[in-house]
Image (cartoon, rainbow, N blue to C red; front, side, top):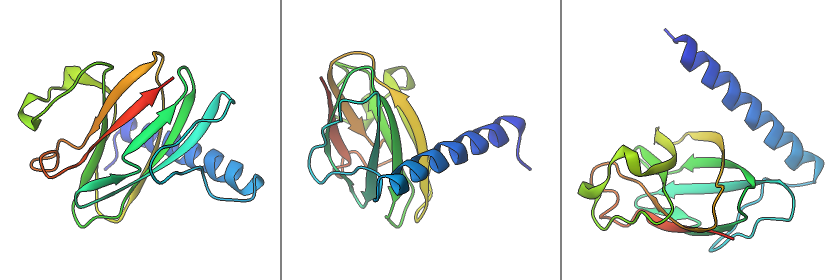
Length: 150
């Protein structure tokens, strides 16, 4: 049975997905995605599509603008659960044992294989943010990247 919090989150996620897809259809294409690095447009919001597999993110390195609202579509095309965690600016881990929740700026938690999740975030400060999947063994297998905010 869904709790009120889960129902509210599902409705919010569905609403963000509908708005994102409506915008993509109106512009004649899919939501914005990149292969290696993405540059946000000069508008106040953008869509970002990230794909997870064993054991990498695509794109691995991303560039966005500070203060811009980002709707991220996280596709897990792998065979196991994955997550997409943006650590606070300046927080760098070299081993998943160094991870703690107080380092998290934004996260999409444990997405089952073959599914997608959409969520929205805004990074207020320019800088470099480490992106990781901290499910056991994933970080050490290569699931990390960099988010640069200008």
